[in-house]
Length: 519
Image (tube, rainbow, N blue to C red; front, side):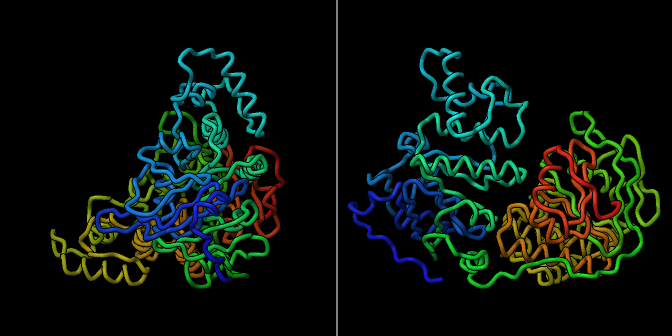
């Protein structure tokens, strides 16, 4: 698809845009995040901002939001050139930002959070609560203004963030990965809310890696690559997912899915009546029964916080169970250490890459050998040369892009961190792979690379437990699917026959028909 020509840069034509960023340049030490990027958003539209990780999307919208001062270029808002020196300047110009990490005070009510920092000098909370309730009703943002935020679901908290921007009369709203932790029903509700906002003349900048979602929600799109605007396809009507993916990566992106008719082997992982507590000492898992066979992928769906994290940690030996049994290849390893489980053939990719999976202030080499260092030693000392050779082999095999092998691993991008982590775990030829949120936050190419490795493990006879909040990923890769709700298995489904609506209903605590055999 041929990109649309650039709009004229004259102020007269700039007035047709709610936002017109021209030639934005932003540099950090050793990195050019934006190298003359453009973004033109028409009033009353939902505009997708797309690109790989590191393409410059977040830097560009942070310039618009007054978080970063640009090193070059122009910012136009509703036909007036702006110079934002702080987020307060951007808010005053009508720019509202909804970040991935919500910025709410849990102990305050919805209404108190909405007006925090912008309330009148003399508060009349009764009137403010009524105004917040009216604003929520206007845009179908179901949020009780009297409830404390700590009682809200993730989807409800996101609505509060949107209400904060609307309270400040933002007519341009920037949302960064807004559906990453929402159920399908919540994501659909958000789409309706954004459409209502656009119909009332507001503009939305929508950052997402979920291309099917972009095509269903957004009107137009801008694609960045290496800090430069490379495509502006105009209207998304008639545009295919593959078209957007190719614009983002510069080549056609292959779809990854499980091969058909994979022979299923014996049970390699069995959980019998597993219960466990959360970090706060509250019940997080309740009598979970689950089997994973050799040569299959069992997907685990659920809204974040419904026991998936505790399930993965209980299997890996990082969280003690209060009852039940964990069996690996038939052996009872309930009380075994993580190291013992690793020796028995368990590979674990945690959802927290840098906090749990990797040591951020250790080098790429040191992190790559954490699973294999006993075989790379001479006596009591590590053989540094062998460690470097091992790391070089792992980096090449799994396509990890690194500057220097002895630099801190925290310098790597998210996709390369995940490739390194997954590669390290797979070097021991495991029998069971537990992968928690393995593609969260990755771009199109990174997602495809990780999914390809997971499917390859299935084909090699490994039993895979795939925990993900990406429903499309689970439906594409899983042989069987379970849904967790409040620490229990709410449904067992066949991903080849179930619908997104059925899975979404189970994720939200509704009823769903159990199909596809026992898990």
